[in-house]
Length: 230
Image (tube, rainbow, N blue to C red):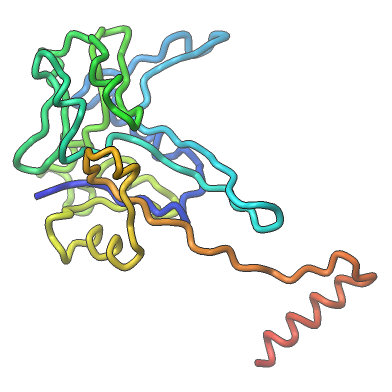
């Protein structure tokens, strides 16, 4: 089994709901409380496992804003596991999830420096490294209904841009959608074989404009009429 996420960059609206839901769940989950330092101060900081980057691509008028969520990729050959001097960072054989043993972690930051995706977060309050666990305490909780045994970020996404499942199963939803939409790994050239996949944005549909028209409303009405009478 190889568990991971698929994120649809064409559908993500950058609302940060996934990041907030992750923060909320992991405040009381397996990682212990996630600290916020000076949350109402001048320079607030805190631990976030999921962060959304925003990029403007293309040239006007064919430009597009792409919202790019980033969290742990649960790499097949995870650099964070390789460099950890205490063995605190490890990859589970049964499902491929990369975790941190809080009892072994000494907060040395080696894993954070090794991770090319910026997925590691040092909790300065507790002095240990933390990261996305794919909500391992939730996805295996048999007290929850089966359809709720998913990461908090997947359950809360209002645009259904996130999918969770087993990439080892060729018929799973994540495998099928990755295959059909040409899902890509982030920076595969690094050689760490990230499990998570991103679905690329679709080509932008060009819409005819009437910038120099003296009566653009009439043009719009004509277009609607043609659409209705097809």
